[in-house]
Image 1 (cartoon, helix red, strand yellow):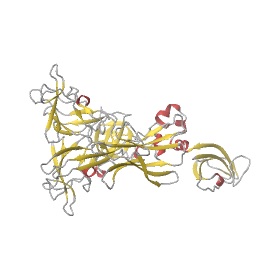
Image 2 (cartoon, rainbow, N blue to C red; image 1 turned 30 degrees about the vertical axis):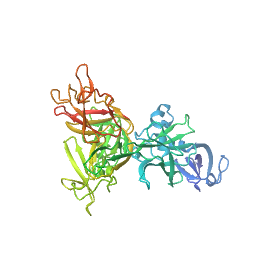
Image 3 (cartoon, helix red, strand yellow; image 1 turned 30 degrees about the horizontal axis):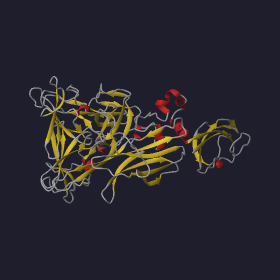
Image 4 (tube, rainbow, N blue to C red; image 1 turned 180 degrees about the vertical axis):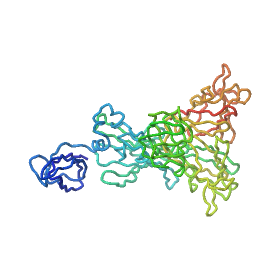
Length: 542
């Protein structure tokens, strides 16, 4: 859309404008005296056709309806976006292009750069609209195949803005169009925007994800800059049935995170607090009443949020980040996944329900900080349907499963079932506390397998990696262990050897194991020996 900038000379301090919604104009009055009064300076925008502005489109010689319209300049919709959101002093400063007003700048610190904010109708100075613009969900066809769908807001008033929705199964090859994507729904929002839903045409494989992203390219700007959304993902994890006997165990973890709810930049850090002076959050927005949220910093450090204060622009955190985070660091806020969201509030995972834990399939959620394990089951008792704790028979649907934490599912019936989760791919580093005792963890990898030598667990520093030793036992060096669950329920044990001439990863039978693979989407146990203290594991990014 072309935006016409019109300057008017006003007489008697007023004028009349009759418009019809075809074009947009930025009208800036010029103050003059005359007719016994003085006009007022001001600026405002109206939408309408050129023909509707007093009948005079250009020139300074004709007065009609009390003003002289003069056509000053044309501006594109993107230029109007910049003028509406950034001061002229900033826009005229080339040194601020990369950080404030340029298409790839991200002044509010959320997951959309300025071009992305423009493309999806968002505010480039408000990190609170991070979740808007692009979302995802999993749909099921008549044959029970699962497909990833991407829904996004598309600007329609700029012919130079080109959108595409791309899909991938490996995060390397991205495709769109015939055989890969299909636009299944378009809903008009207003004259400038519409909501579009695109479906991946390749079903999500069990154990393998499907990824989707939205790109927006501004072809009339130098270099045709492109904005790329977060990578959304659909995952399906098979829960093995018992084949008619036994109770097989499956380790399960969510390999995606919830979409970003807020993105910002740290202004200051206090004891147990972080402040963002540009924040737009509301009081209590990220407190437990709206579900438990956490803040993740650029380093991958994550801390749960206790309170949100809009008056002081401050987050109160469960832990102190002094010395770990500083002014200028980026952060994002996400909601934790719950049992209801992973397994389905209505048992969409298809686990066997029952009136009690003995009759139903079981889900074990281990809390490493306290070394307690919750046993859950899905109740089918009329009036009490839902997830319950087995010991207290109280509702458990809102129990949190943090990122990179796993749980165990015990299946008691013959047939397999599947857990389907949609979310956002975690690409950057992730820091995870490993506590004394058992920890069920994952690498947060969707498509990348990791060898043990690539995990960052072998730092030979007990504060950041596992405690090494000459053998897998606790004697004499309190050696930590990694435990991998086999389909038959047995465990393979590995340890990090510090024996001279034989350093590196080994199995419990002393076979070299540096190249042992941890598959993507496969949780495992870390046994942290008592006395070794809490270890901070820096998980490599995807």
